Length: 131
Image (cartoon, rainbow, N blue to C red; front, side, top):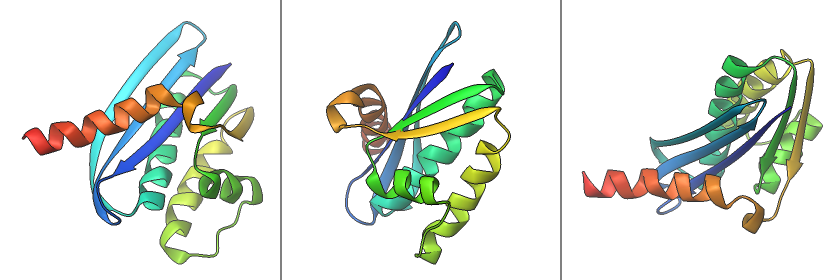
């Protein structure tokens, strides 16, 4: 099983945004920190989900468990629906990828259980500020 921890960070809402992805399991350990542009915080979380699933798909097509501290993202994936059209495009992309795994789960976790992904997202913002 791969555990995929995702997080987004925005300096403003909207504002400069970064994502953090931490994948572990099946002999893998991947850390990804990317600046993604100017977005609101929810969009940034959805971008992290899509990127996390893309990276996980490169490593396994079997059992994927995503962990996020975004209740909006987790609820949208579980319901396979989101009202706001701004996020629908990202949700559709995520569901398309999620459906390629043999088993896919998503779980909401408290922020203190998602520290690695959070630090990676913040690092992306810091690198952008420093450049």
